[in-house]
Image (cartoon, rainbow, N blue to C red; front, side, top):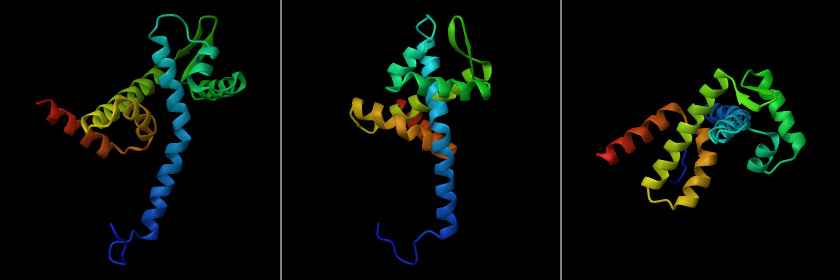
Length: 145
């Protein structure tokens, strides 16, 4: 689409959009970590720092710093049995996981190859508004019929 004076967004709208993206970026790491702890905990054994290192490809120190932040936010607890989500953390993790599954399913329904859908969903999931997510869910429900 060509931009003309008639269809160019106003600076105020652009500023709002950029502000929203910055907030989403701030929350991405938190969401990724609680989702990873949730999925790793489904194996049945405890979640360890080394498990998160493997998932994210980061150092031990990076994982520890992230966990300290998550603890302060009341999302995880660390103990002798490893890393566990609090109720608040599990609620967020399930929301993130479901959002991820919706985005990935939507991309697959559009014909995006599986590997690309999985990778793209990982980034897109953090930047969807509720209206867009609801539209994807309606699309998927209609496609199932």
